[in-house]
Length: 234
Image (cartoon, rainbow, N blue to C red; front, side):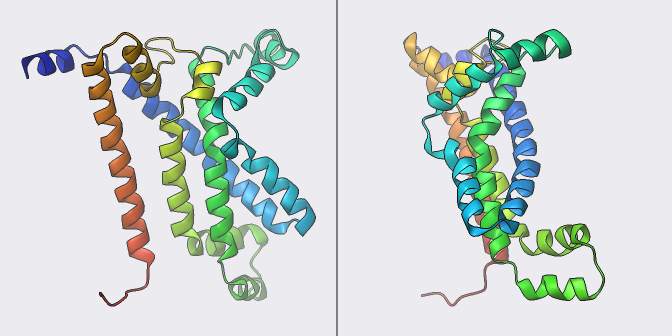
């Protein structure tokens, strides 16, 4: 017990803050990108919808290291786009906190997109037609009719996106590296201390992740229970 208390008191908590901050930033980006992409997919023809859906969902089925490899090809300073960002805009992605955010966004975005699109598909079309007869613009209909109606599904997708973002490891390691106090997330910290044989510190971080995961699952269940129709118990 004394060893546990001593380890906790001397623990560097920067991986927790880096994980939460990068996860929150990735969730915000995925939220607005997911809304936009889902709206575009709903208005596309079936053929283009299938192509668009495949492209946007691809990061969810690819190994994270494959996604990290492609991100390195794009943002590396040795590549044209990465070099342009750094030389003309002063933006460096590789081995930076921005790299953590981008990697987490790419990996978590498909969850936001899929859940949002599924929620949009459940919206009653008659509500949209009724709003149009009242003279509402498409933008007003989207934010005042579609979003509130699809709110529970969008909210669940947001929580799942955050959960996936804070658990990202492979793509983040390849793009942002594992720099203590800068890009080192909880997942990376667990892997590093395990390599050093420090199972106590790894166990503490695992407990932190479990607590966060439980809170997120509880949030999803509460959101679902508020919108589900009441049913008789067995």
